[in-house]
Length: 160
Image (tube, rainbow, N blue to C red):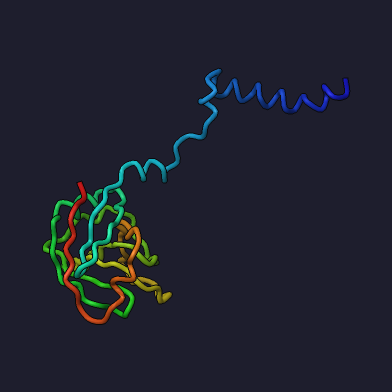
């Protein structure tokens, strides 16, 4: 009987789990998180710099979809603060995305006052001034390719 008493919490936990999720064994799995849903709705782009081609994963959102409507796009990206390459976009795009005042290396962002596209290749710890940036996506690997002095011509295309 003592062994049975020690098992009661486990038996009750299993019973509650079955009540909450039904008898289907797969029903107890965690619900999709926001991140997994976001991942399912992503697009890929290629970023060609000289003889290198990088890929980037875009975050689904109104601002990103408006950016994709500009592709393919060839721009001259200038250096700013030895941390990012930026280029003026041919027109302003949606500002419906979430704004941030911090960034990560590799992020592809929209700066609405420009209207500019930028890619961060180095962290300098500085905060981004108002109105902040809208993250469009992130370079998958090889962002150090942008760590070169001066301007560079870049071609961005949607990967089908």
